[in-house]
Length: 223
Image (tube, rainbow, N blue to C red; front, top):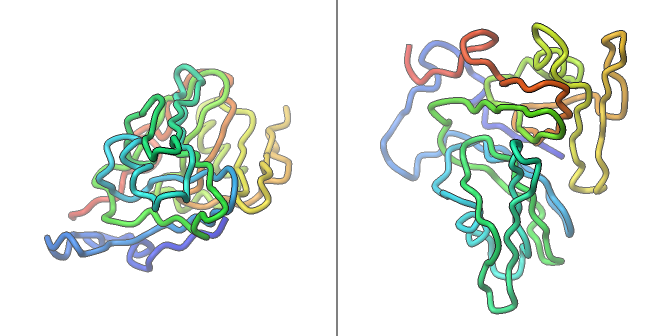
């Protein structure tokens, strides 16, 4: 999965990310996700106007996406909507917030990439991770977390919270996994990660991540 961030997002300094214009066509940046026929996992790290998965699904050209799902970490269930032959979307629509991970099923004509494009969000996302499987994405202000071990250790600050991390390869349709050994070493096929990555973790205790104000502060739009 290839990611591209506009250079502006990498220049994180005092006031560097201040809004430059109120013109709605002004774009701050984007994250690119490669997609292909079948199941794909995406995230929505940039600001967006969709309020739920149905609105998100309706933004795709007709015939390119047949189902959209969001995961509820609290119940460990997917909330799925499907496109009927009539074009109507039916199922359980799910509210979308910044950083959400979304799973889509693409038809043969699915575009080669999906772009989360727009303004940098004013507040970085955080998640409550419940015991068991959870889905999240790596916030844009976590650029220092470039490996699975760094990500796992960051989540595990103060004690073991998660013991496995996974990322799905949209091209090969295979999960890359890193598991934490009892020694604290992370091992497996998932080695590198990046901001915006959709991530699956197995939590051994309930925890919140990131914990605001204790690990890294959200990116600021002012000094």
